[in-house]
Image (cartoon, rainbow, N blue to C red):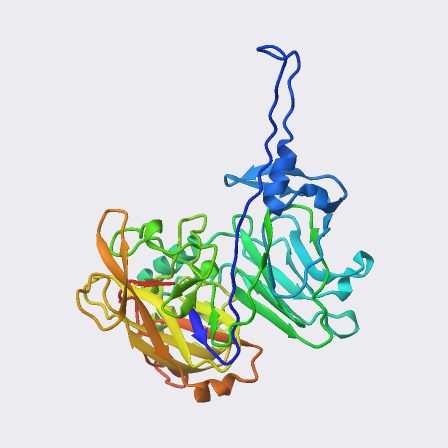
Length: 467
């Protein structure tokens, strides 16, 4: 999902796992010894995408364990540091995937890039994600503030609604409970930490949600990587990938951290019908980064789940507090009913989507992107119609695909024009909050209409397939 701007970057990710194999030979049909394969070293090579000999691991504890069918490095009860032996420069992307083993204990990671002196790693650009013995959220911290303080910090709430009200309508209560139950807690959630490094600039993301942009002349990104794994933590993978130079026209937005659906029109799109996920795909001249399926198979965004839950209850629902964390929570508070993204701020002129609407009855195939101030609102909305997956005639550029059941259909290149003048009202924001939803209408609280804004109306919307 790229966006036009006057300053964009393109991300290219190449995943090349390295496996080590040992071959045992003997002088007879059956050797008199049994060679023990170094499975731990092979597993670490897969996790770190390089030979473990290139890393300084302190202390040399921890073990390679299988978790959810994948090899992980488990820290156990110890804090473990990993110092890379390779010196990296700008135009690089660092990606680290991890999980807290037990949400009743503390755990987490920190990562620093551009490290010259390992004893002074705190002087390098870095960030941390730590668990505070909680089942529904983790805390994140960005280093590099004045006098050794954090630049910024906050919480990543994995479940936006943790309490329910028996005063809600029964249908609403059941819907909210089902949504929250579908979200993994701290001990089930694989978290992805990502740094995008350019000359004198570091962007930090957590599950593709922008945490911070540090763009200062004094930021030196040339150096090694320094990782601290807290006790009670699984490290699933660490990857460093070279990035091409800045693209002057486009910024592809990775959506893997937002994917919420598997099927469209009752079937799953065959992977052979889609571009590879390990590189940028050009649709015409527009670059896209297609996501890999997550552990649940989700590989795209569906708008069918988007609706304003608070519209079903009476009373004051302020923008900044109340049920559902208010009407304008940010993207770092996860609610399946609110598909909210957090991206670098810029003067965007267009939003390009790969999208299709399914053939659901009594629905409207309209997509709206709302830019807003977290907690406050003041949204700026832009919309477009999306052709049906089964449409035979349309002016939109068709992208033929096939479902697993053999049904043929089309995705489409959909463009939503944006107004940089309207978006300038968010120019003071370090990050740009945006919500993808259906048609929006004016909302007024009842019985006193003192609270009002523009929100998605209800659950009825065509199933949107978006990348």
